[in-house]
Image (cartoon, rainbow, N blue to C red; front, side, top):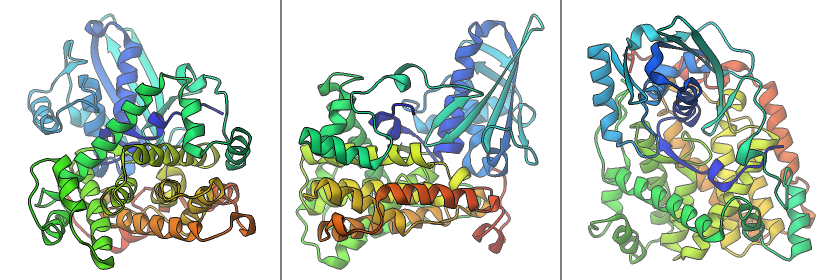
Length: 468
């Protein structure tokens, strides 16, 4: 299996979807790199297939591929510049390809949604075609396989994804064996593998940046009201809830965390804060904001909500934040290798279910759980998400997606607490069992419940939504 780093599972990007926005964006960037000399290109067309076609408008897939072709990076692009630039391209029918060469480009003509077709490799398929001025053409197919991961047709792991780790991990049982042999915790084991890619201090800095991106996203969501884009007219709720919970103002994300820590909270308030954190992140995600894919954008609020609960209500320090995120990332890697983190392959169990398992493991770790208890926490969280369908109304990452992040966060906290008071040796179900079960459930699940907006709530709620 491929080698997956913490920074493959936890990535900074732009909402609303890792598989339908971030992945296609990255695919467009890869296509530009393959083309080489962009000044010789006269025309580019993009075909979207399967789930990317069926829910691509609601997920902003067309926006993503256009921004990728424009040469913008989802990690650094000012999110407020995306739609003004898109309007300029639409009005002028001109695209500055890779920021190097102006070509004729009409989004309505050159981004084609093939609603009744799929490419063979995965439900999320893209086909790029470029015509050079010489008449030569270049074509490439890519698949957005979940969590912002992109693979080309027939591609095998290369580069950093093909490195040989000192402690390769494909199953949870291997984690138990390595930790027992080395006498280390799960984050200690992860650090040893991460050392293969970069110096230890660079990993620590990168994880700190991930935490700060999560925190800052939550801060923005808690201070932004209004209505979400897309036509459903969903009211943003986090800011109003935040106003009810917050006793005093704070002028930055860092001072905001300190202010929350100083408040006295009862059980009801704590639950409200967890929901507020999760809602805030996913309202930002639905608004094309900057989020951390954890492990997907549709489930981006679960881990920040549980982590901020730890930081704010348990006074978690920098070292414990590192341990939380390193542990969570390793659990996400297990699910990607043994099942899927793509809703188009496995329904919402692959998104909210996996993120809840990751968050449960991270929280159990920093609360003093043993290796067995940490893995048990992940197992409990996923066990109670098995079979969860992906049925977004109008193909938007809003209903039921935003609320599901709050539910996934609360389940993660409960799972961690249950594991901490349990003996893993007496458990009947192991994490490896639940990962295999999740994958078998995904294979059995009807396609209409896999991010197609052709089943579930997406059919029960009749709405007239203009194309984004």
